[in-house]
Each structure stands twice: as C-alpha cells, then as structure tokens.
Amino acid sequence: MSRTLEIRTILKGIIEECGCKAYYERANKNTVYPYAVFEFETTDISDNVKREIEVTIDIWDKSDDSLTVETLADEIIHSVNYKFLFPNGESLRIYGVRKRSLPDEDVALKRRQIECSVIYFEKE
View 1 (cartoon, rainbow, N blue to C red):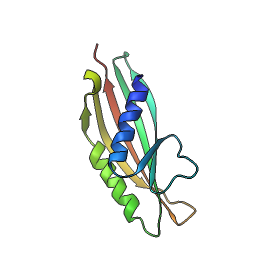
View 2: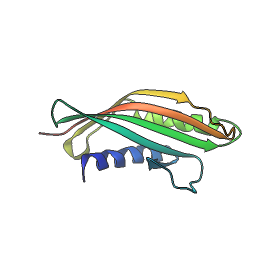
View 3: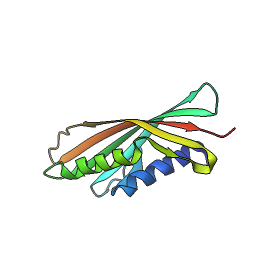
C-alpha cells in the first residue's frame, strides 16, 4: 500500500473511532449526518524520508444546535493531537491542531473545521 493510502486509512480510522462516518475529499450524496470529510496537502521535506501533510477535517451535522458537531470536533482533536503512531515501523506524528466554526447559509447545517499537521518518517 502506498504511503498516501496508508495515511488516509489511519486518519479515517481515527475519525470513525470518534463516532462519525469519515470520507476522503467528498461524502456520498445521501450520507447520514453527522459525518466528516477530510483532505490533505503533502510536502516532501528535503529527502523522501520525511513528509509533512497538512490535514483539513470538516465535520458536518444537521441539527437545531451545535452540540453534536462541537462534541465530535473535540473528540477528534483529543484523538489526534500529539498522536504518535508507528505503522510498519515508520513514525507518524500529528500535532498543531486548530479548530474553527464555519457558519453555513442553511442554518440547520452545523460545521466545524479542524486543521492539523502530520509528519511522516519512513525507515531508511
């Protein structure tokens, strides 16, 4: 499995352990709320051993209040912040978590956005 697919799988698993369905780039048309959509931008740093990934996670809920979306965002932040993982002997570190509220034109839709950085070291 490629590095990118492996990291996508890890992030999807972390998000889904927090209680909402997770999708990469786009949710399915008839997705049930709440759900999360994540994407990332990758930068190779100096050599192919170290890679930095900027991750954006959008959490959506359709509700009269923001309790569910806020709780899910906080649970995801708690699960990823300063996380160290070692898939296949390689090191994956997640840090620098930021959260913001993004109002939608549809007042029934509640959205929170989480941004964080992932540093991925491959074994040489």
